[in-house]
Image (cartoon, rainbow, N blue to C red; front, side):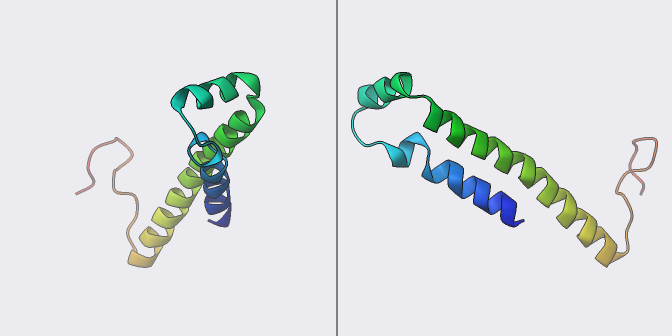
Length: 81
């Protein structure tokens, strides 16, 4: 779970909204001049999204184990009841 928070914060803190101040034209001009920081921020956000998927899966599995229930759907894809 710590990876998710770290990547998300890195992406948000290094993105265009907090990194650049000024008009929209200035932000666009900077994006065309040096795209590497923006790509790094996007990569961090994508990594956070992937890590978030694993966090949700782990939490769901832990909740199911604690409640003693199995998967919500049967093997045929229909509701188990």
